[in-house]
Image (tube, rainbow, N blue to C red; front, side, top):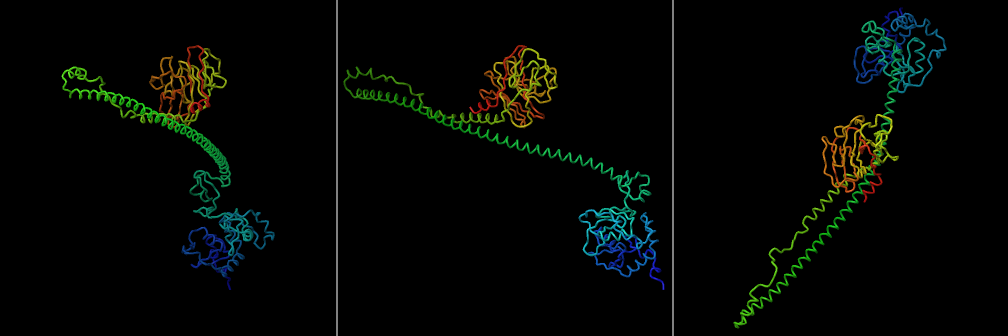
Length: 561
């Protein structure tokens, strides 16, 4: 009697997924058979529970049962025809098959198994039917992940199958079109391809083994990693800078709060003082008016008494029948007694009208001026690297003097070589700033701010169009500002000390008479770069008096006074 294997064609004992002889064949409800590991792996890689043969879809993972008859036939088929099957598999996967049968393999099988490495979390064995064990290897030929126990059986049979560290989604490593391993990389299309792809769609393309491309791309990745780490460090530094700025901002806010409390306390005292003075002035004016009115009343009462006396005399004379007496006394009574003309006399009732309005107006002006100069007092020092060689700076960099003689100084890019200008060392990119300069009796100077990119070599026009916002005294004759064209100002009395106020965000530069606290002029502009205090001093080639920058302590004291 013929054995079952003699009546079966070879393809009838092949799994349609791995194209190999069944291993642990199982049947699914539609009647088709597959290796247990193959159908399990297929369903894991798909979002649907579908039969690979008839495409029947199940709503949930169906129950599978081991086909014992088919398993026995498959085992007999393997025993009787293992060599032809292995040769066919060798052609299918381009691998060599050992000439020895599984039974003839050495018993020291663990030597064939690569050393175990730490499990990759989340990758389970596809063959385990009970509790799934962690996979230690994945086979690129079987598209199956194996635990250590099932790997021994696999390695014993398929020593040439390519094993890798356990991974998910093994089907992603196979060519979708040819179902071959993606082992080459197409340089032109920048994709992974299989051997058959190089004979068809990528015939004329330059391909390299994926290992070589991996090495090249890994080097590129290292470079990218270094760049990313550098970007991280730059951003960490930026975070630290921003945190530092936040701390500086807190300190600045605290100082500003303290200054504002001080200024408004002064204003409250000024208001209270002004109120007291106003009340005293009104009361004094009222008393003065009352005394004057009382004098008028007394004078009027004296005239009334005189007129009453005259009236009594007239009445007495009018009743007499003595003709001689009447005519003798009539001349003295016929004329009115000497009195004042009271027609225009009046007592003003609104002498205090407008007093309050004037006082409040004055307070408003004072408040505006105090708030306007509520700024960080800047401790300005002069920058010797920018000073024209005709100018001499003091050791503390707070005083400036025209020597009347040229000094041999290095011609640095920052230095003004023709115009007698020097700039401050401290620049401004934000905030409000205030400083004062003692100009004394000097009669040719400029004070203000300049942007960092102003021209420093050759002849220079000091104007807003060139980046200068300044107040000037020219040849002792007139005050002007560096508008374009220059604007002449009427300033009286002569300035001795000038206050400079800068609000960077508002684009404001204002000048004040620091002694009288009166406003002189304000520029309104938009600042796009760093600003520096600047100073111009010219004295017709003769040694000049000193131009001094007031220390912060002196400015603060003057503000409090």
